[in-house]
Image (cartoon, rainbow, N blue to C red):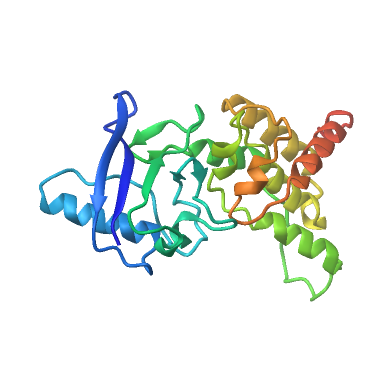
Length: 249
């Protein structure tokens, strides 16, 4: 199959950017979207042109590196699918596809489709540590946790920090990401001792990084490749108010 691509090209953070068109032939329906980019870059290299920069790592939907807007949708048209797991069978021969980097002031463009997402790292760092008892290993089941709570915590822990929630939000809010990180620790007893301080520090850091406020559009939940629920945002808000009203904050 042949695909016509309009890809955002930008030489650097302070350089002007714009779309450039490419036609890629010989694409297999079984190729992933990133493998199609590999094919395009091989063709550009053979022509002596500069390959397109894009982030990728595990290519198994785990690391969250493959951030791209595909035809205006974060990670493309398929629900709960990261770009690395999006296959070309999702498109038709002759289709034209627009590909852009994440758009948010807190995610500045580094080059082409690569953006700087270290703001997420700084939010995680602001949360600090989870205290644990040292010494001998505890007996099994020493801290009983109901399956319902364990499943809920695991659902929030599934967040891979890809940033699709920010890219899809009209306010470029990181509330779903921060809510997931706060909720998955706040639900478990191991995360309770520092819960208040962690919540306040992470929310404050989110605001310092320049992310917008949540307006309940729920676009973040719609594009999240792991299906993180916006209920995590409500959990974050309750935890923040509770911490601000208590001595724990």
